[in-house]
Length: 432
Ligand SMILES: [Zn+2]
Ligand SMILES: [Zn+2]
Image (cartoon, rainbow, N blue to C red; front, side, top):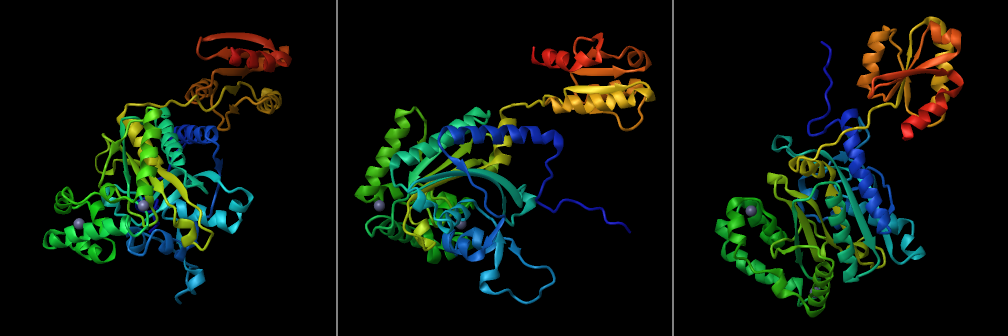
């Protein structure tokens, strides 16, 4: 029996009629990144497993249960350590790896880049989650300046607003630094609080107490969520430097009129974050309401063996941007597949039609013809399905006169013009 092949569970084909909207969002993103001085970077779809264990964290959900291994097919032996690869489960570590590998920070001490890339996580598709989703993100690496945090947040804000994804709230928090009297002190206070509640925590969170108690704040279980309402807040445990940093971030956002809410329980699920963390949460997206998230990661590059270089960035789920647009009743209409369709009404006209077809394409117009021996009537129907603004009709009469009939599909008017002047006329009509 023949197999009916399907896209793997948790993945989606993006069909031609959907691609226009994707491109619209991606082009807006590229445009905003360019305005803010960010350049594009592209990294491989798979990386050394250790890169993510080291940065995202051994105890994170991503590393513990969400990565796809990449192995040569048919090899049963466990690969050597340096050949254990995984599909990219997040965007920041690969960018940091690439900057270090190519010494970009030696060429320029502050590097600002953006990426648009597929992200792979082993998720439960029954919960509507994708195993391959797409992110656009930015990373600004090389400066601890709080106004760089502001820049990254404003970039996300402007981008999302410009694609009709508004309706989100910016949640903002600072989780402090590794100084003894900063996050470690908070961690102690949080741990003491959570230990007192241990019997009421879910099994995952009881395990998290020993590995990373901050992750309990991220737990989606109802019981845990109620408990953490009373938990101590990281903002109350910041060292003086982190307090100053956060104050400047807040003032910077306020000066630019960017609204945000303090969210003392926002920690983000990755180990590498320090100081500022933020999430853009859309009110109409239910369980998967975080459209964009990020923060500062001052220890990440040192963790990868590079000179220490502080950085800040965000990742934004493109599928969720599209859902937010949908929730906001934003529609997208393509401008049609072609500008001009060439309809051939007589076999003798073929050579002339072919010549015209390629000459018009050469001028930059989008032009197509029939390849299925359709009748003239059905060629016209097809032309309007393609959204052609004009149809060029070539029949016996036109051939004899060396003319072509130019039909305006919107106005329903037509005129016969010399073939030699058709190109000029079309360019003129299409630009008016
Ligand atoms: Zn601190
Ligand atoms: Zn829990």
